[in-house]
Image (cartoon, rainbow, N blue to C red):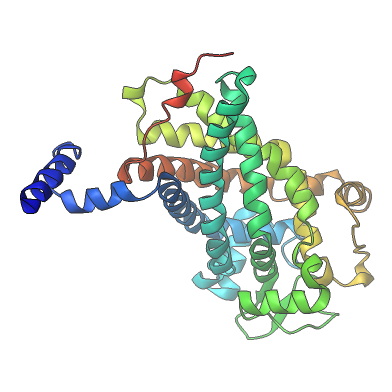
Amino acid sequence: MSSSQGSTLSSNVAELVDGSSAHRDVSLLDDVPVYVKELIAGGTAGAFAKTVIAPLERTKILLQTRTEGFQSLGVFQSLKKLLKHEGILGFYKGNGASVIRIVPYAALHFMTYEQYRVWILNNCPALGTGPVIDLLAGSVAGGTAVLCTYPLDLARTKLAYQVVDSRGGFRRGMKSICAQPAYNGIKEVLASVYKEGGMRALYRGIGPTLIGILPYAGLKFYVYEELKRHVPEEHQSIVMRLSCGAIAGLFGQTITYPLDVVRRQMQVENLQPLSQGNARYRNTFEGLSTIVRNQGWKQLFAGLSINYIKIVPSVAIGFAAYDTMKVWLRIPPRQKSQSISPG
């Protein structure tokens, strides 16, 4: 009797699979909580996108932090110089820290976005169900993800700031007047920074990061979801998602880019010699005004051209990969926004 009940139960589960032959795999997948699937989808999408654009990310950091020998070079000349001094692997220096950071960051970002979105819809009916929900949920989700993963971003920046030439000599940013040993990995960076200044040092530059990520993350989700709303479901292809993601990334990044420059300079300022007039910034607004006064307003947009080049594939691939992973993991579609009438 129990065996017949078991077979009936399994056949009922199989019927929910829409004709798939992998009944066991699907039933196991269906048992996984939705938020766990969202974490997996977000982390996978983030790691994939970040690895694709790693060479451009490394070059952007060198331009932003005015590393010696790179200040007057353009994007392609910088890439050539990196290739000459460090080879192909030089393009991916710091990418290990970047991927280790982006997996939890993207996972938390996408998952908390979905969760905050549902919470806002349930608790703030006066806001309606339009794109403002995506703006708010995306902003808070971005802040949450940054707070949880910021020390890894700090480590990634410090590793990318180092330049070792092919002759074995070590150069760090500006001239190596304050000779410090090269960091050999993420663990060493985090241990060294913590030893120098404790938890506060691990969050150096968090101010401009949060000020920048709140509008950037919100605008990114807002623009992406709003563009998708204007495309019929049957026409929402990978190419369409890539295009929407690219536009969303470009729009959000342009508005918030100067804050990213301040953040990078605050992250590496202890590696730069004071003899070249590199003052320590006490806060975001002091950083902005000091950079404009000492380095010129154009420095606030140093590396922006390469950011445009990398943002197009990065955000586009991230959003497209996330939507694709949601389908593969059988994450239910967002019915909530269509079932609630604006209050």
